[in-house]
Amino acid sequence: MPDLLWDDVKLFFDLEFNGALPDVVIEGTSVEDWQTLLDLIQSQGWQYAYELYDGPTEVPTAVQMIAMGAGSAHLRVRPVPEIEAIFRAYQAESIDFDVDLRELQGQERLDVLFDFFRVIGRRLRKSVLMCSEGSDGPPLLGFDVEIDRVVLLADPGV
Image 1 (cartoon, rainbow, N blue to C red):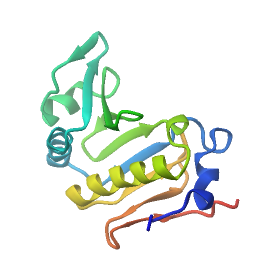
Image 2 (image 1 turned 90 degrees about the horizontal axis):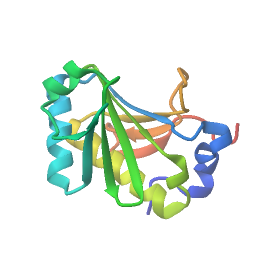
Image 3 (image 1 turned 60 degrees about the horizontal axis):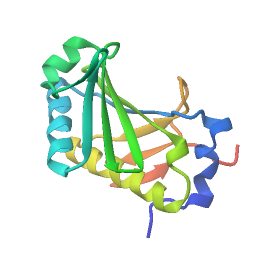
């Protein structure tokens, strides 16, 4: 049984309502958590590519990645070929990434996204929260590490 059903959350995946690239954040992280994430990405067999402003390059260590800053680099991760997450190292204290809602339509894709959140959240032992694109508002949904499942954090009927 999925954590959440598409019909219950589809408004959060509407481009008009949420923007095309909602923000996903893991708060309270450290350089060590970033390195754990990099190691996880490589160990899961997910497709990934690290890109600097001038093109693809080898994935650096977390220390190097954070020192470069998010303005010049990003890490593209595909848990499955049809879905991409784009990580940007703005700071050590949070792991930030975007997902593309155009790739996340329907229950099957939703389940892949939530599995991705779960794998990351469990490894880091931290919650993974999704907010509207560019929003400073509260998260809409996320993986709650305390109860080990993805939950609604806002009313999708609003």
